[in-house]
Length: 163
Image (cartoon, rainbow, N blue to C red; front, side, top):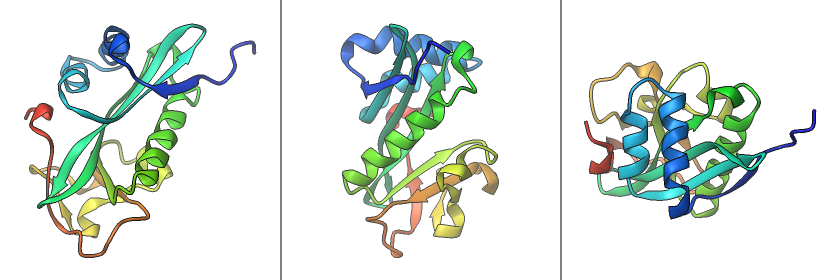
C-alpha cells in the first residue's frame, strides 16, 4: 500500500473550503459543515493524504454551568478514506491536545458504538446533563487529567452550534 499514514496538522484559514467539502461529503445535510464554519475552534485539526485534505475534527468551547469544557464535533472523513483509521488518528490527536491544554472534559453527541473506544462514556453518569433532551447512549463525555468530580451540571454548546 503506497499511501502511508495521513499527516495531521492544525487547520488554517486556507483550509476552509476543503474542510467544508469533507463534512458535506461525509454527512447527509449541511449541519456539520455549518458547525465547522461557525463554531469558534479551540482545536481544529486536519488530516492530509496524497496532497488532499481527507479529514477534519473540531473542538469548540462549551461550558458545564460556568466551567469551560470542550465540545467535540464535527469529525468527518471523506467517504473514500473512511474505515482506514483516519478518524481514529484525528480523535486521538484532538484528545491529546485537549489533555495537554489542561481541559477537564470533552463531551459530544455521537454513536455509542464508536466513541467508547476512545474512553467516552455516558455523560449523565458523570453528572453532565445534556443541553437538550437526548438519549443517554448518544450523550457521551470523556474526563481528562484535569477533570474534577465537582464538575457537574448542564452542558451548554457555543451559540455557533445552533439548535
